[in-house]
Image (cartoon, rainbow, N blue to C red):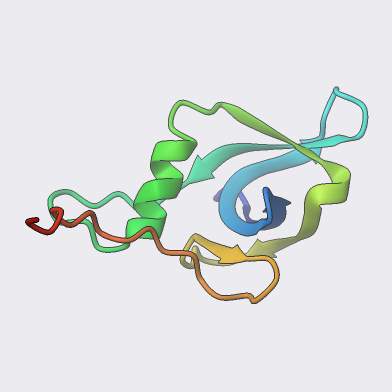
Length: 106
């Protein structure tokens, strides 16, 4: 039987993060929840979703993520992975890092 998949939504620096992981449990650190085995889409070549790429880079090499209980909005067990996102906590709008453009000539 396949391991369960969880969608974890939490607050971090004024933004709402939505990640997917295969392991969720009470942490040995008091007041924290641990999330392990983070799941990201793996695309070779062209970057399809810059937010997914940003999250994968931010959490690269993370074995277990310890989240303070008060920052967790919800944890859902889901059947399949959706899109990992970062949203603004106030407006709910997706936060997308702008594509770097060359500076304008003077």
